[in-house]
Amino acid sequence: MFIVTPLLTVLDALVVGYVLVFFLINVVFVALSSRAIRRDLAVEDVRPALGRAHDRFLPTVTLLVPAYNEEVTICESIESLLRLRYPSFEIVICNDGSKDKTVDVLLRKFHFVRTELDYDPQLASAKIRGFYEVRGPLPPGLTRLVLIDKENGGKADALNAAINVSQGEFVTSMDADSLLTPDALLLAARPIVDDREGVVAVGVQVGISNGSLVENGRVVEMRLPKAWIARFQIVEYMRSFAQGRVAFAALRSLLVLSGVFALMRRDLVVAIGGFLTKTMQAKVGIEYCGAGVHTVCEDMEIVVRLHRYLLDKKLPGKIEILPFPTAWTEAPENYKDIGKQRSRWYRGLLEVLNYHRAMIGNPRFRQIGLFSLPYQLLFEALAPIIECVGYVVLLVTLALGVLSVKSLLTFLALAAAINLCLSALSVLLCVRTEAGPHGSGLALFNYERTRDLLLLLFAGFISNFGYRQYLVAWQLKGLWDFLKGKQGWDKFARKGFAPRPT
Image (cartoon, rainbow, N blue to C red; front, side, top):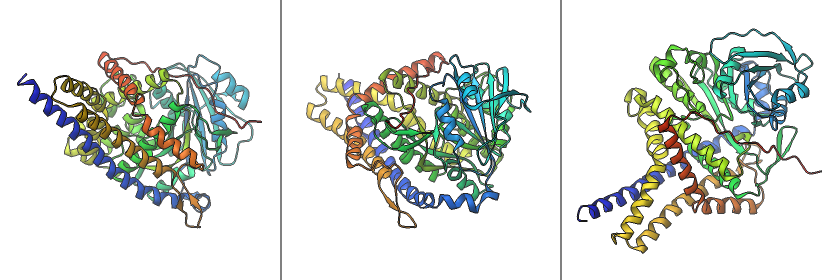
C-alpha cells in the first residue's frame, strides 16, 4: 500500500500533464490554422480566374478511382468528376474485383467499350481482366474516361493498376464514393502553379455529405444529418482537417492526405514503388517497409514514405493542404460500422509507425522525425491506451481513498472542457465568415442556420460522454488486431447520397 499509493499519485499527475500538453499544442494548431484559412479563403474567392489565367501552367492530372462494391454511389461520383472545370485531365476507374454490379452499372451508364490500352506494369498489381474506354464525346478538358476491370487485390493494388495506365503529370488518390466540387482540381492545382518545382502533393479538406442535398454528383445544399453519430463525425472531421492537418502543413510536417482526394506527382509515386502492397517490387519500398507487407492506411503510409524518400535523397518537396472542402464523402451512420472503421484506421496508424519507426526521433528526418511522427506516436497511437489506463487509475485511486470524488469529477470536467474547447474552436473556424477580396462573405462550411451551428457545438460537447469511450474501445480492438497481424478491411455498406426531394 505504501508503494502503490505514491505510484498511483504519480500516474494521476502524468495523465493530467499529458492532457494539458495535448491541449496547449492544439491551441497553437488552432492559431496556425486560423491564419492559413484566412489566407486561403481569399484565394478561393478568385478561383474562376485561376483557370483562365494559368491554363498553360496547370499540370495534367489523372483521377484514379478505385472501386470495390460501390454500385450504390459510383455513378453519382463519376458524374461529379465529369463536371470538373480543368483544362486537361483524365479519369481512370479501377474495379477491384467487385462482387456486386459495380462494373455493370458503369458500362450501362457511361457506355464503355472494351478495348486495349497501353499498360505499363511499372507497379505490380493483381491480374487484369479487361480494359474499357468511352469512345463518344467527352466534356471539355476531359481527355480520356477509362475503366480497368481486375481481380481483387485491395485499394492500394487498384490504385497502382490505375497508375500504370495513367498519363497525367499528377495523379489523384480518391475513393469511389467521393464527390468533388466543380473547381476541385483548379483549387488543388493552385499551390502547384505557385511553386511548380517545390510542391509534390496537395490534399484538401473533406466534408461529410450525410444530410446534405446532392444533385448530379454535387452537393447543392449543406444540411446537418439527423443522426447524431453523423453529427459527431462532422465535428471530428472539422478538428482533424481544419485544425490539425492545416497546422501540420504550415509547419511543413503534414503526414496524412485523405484517401478521399489528394494530388501527388506521378513520377515520385512510381519512384517510391507506388502504394504499399504485398507484391511491391520497388527497391525503395522494400528497403523502407520490408517485402511482402501492406497496410490498411495506404494514404498515410505513402505520404510518410514520400517524405522519407525526399529527405533521404535531399530533394526539394512540399506537401500542402487546402482548408476548404473540395471533396465530400459519406460517413457511417451506425455504431458497428463506425467502430470497424475506427479500429481499421487505428490499426493502419500502428502499421505505418511500425514500418517507419527508424524515422521517429531521428534528426536526419528533420521536423518529420523530430515532431510529426513523435506527435502521432504520443497523441494518436498512445492516446486510447493512455485514456483507458487513465480511467482505470482514477477509479483505483478513488477506491483506495487516494483521490476524492470531488477531485475525480474535477478532472473529468477538465478533460471534457478541453475537448469541448478544441471542438468549439474548430467548428467556429469552419463556419465563420471571412470577407473576400470583392467583399463577398466566405466560409469553409456554409451551414447558414444558427440552429446548425448550435447543434454542432452541442455535438462536440455530448460526444465526450459515451461516444468517445465507445471509439476508444474499438481502437483497443484495433491494437489487438495489429498485434495478431490482422489484414482485413471491414468495409461498411453505403446508403447513397440524398437527392433533392421532388
